[in-house]
Image (cartoon, rainbow, N blue to C red; front, top):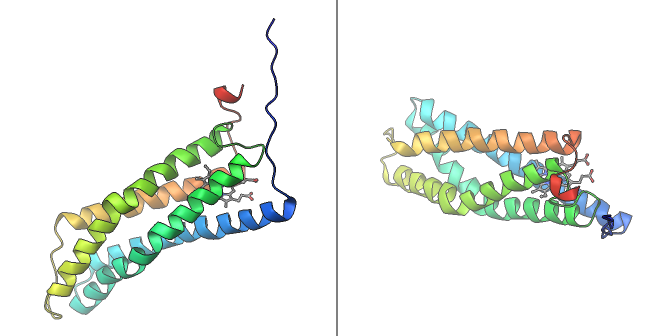
Length: 174
Ligand code: HEM
């Protein structure tokens, strides 16, 4: 006969949990907002015929993303993990949390390894070009566009999962 022993859940006091949830909602939706903003600037930079607009739009992606993307994504990620760890949701116990964890782990790694170096290169290309000349950013355009579309879709999916909490428990949780 097998007996199942329920694992106790570590809990936060209600006020602490509320502050943590507030931090999580502000930073995770802020992260989504940063992506929508960067995607808008990228589309503008790639489609405009006006060199001034192009330089401002493409330069601004690094100006905004450079200082904000790493701290905002890390705060959203760690606050989400803590909310899961200190509640009945866990991090690996429910499928909706696990999917959020996997999606955001990929994003948190790709930001410093791929996204920010690309934005920095584009910013350097734009700064080096004469102000009255459109810049050809080559392969960077397609990368920035696909990164913006994929990450925005991922974070919207995370927001939908957080509110609807679908799919029940993982097999690991029994
Ligand atoms: C871009 C990424 C993310 C977005 C947009 C997001 C969004 C949200 C939102 C809007 C809520 C509030 C839901 C509610 O109160 O009904 C929430 C709660 C929560 N999130 Fe996230 N989140 C993200 C990443 C993560 C990560 C990485 C984890 C953990 C692995 C996580 C775990 C949780 C947990 C456990 C809650 C508490 C749910 C509750 O107690 O009702 N989130 N998230």
